[in-house]
Length: 52
Image (spheres, helix red, strand yellow):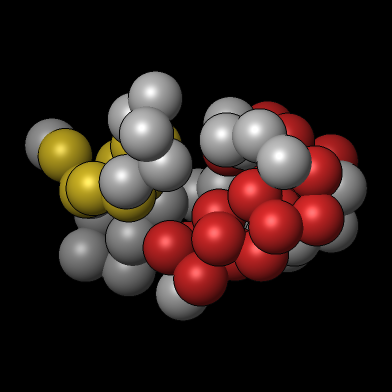
């Protein structure tokens, strides 16, 4: 889900977003993380990962 929103943001804005960018621009409703409790991270290339 988040990876798709990162890609949509990149196409619209021509830059890699932060989680805050996605939330502020209404690409995501919240940034609470994954349902399994892990945190969502976006690297400088736009790859989304979940970390502890």
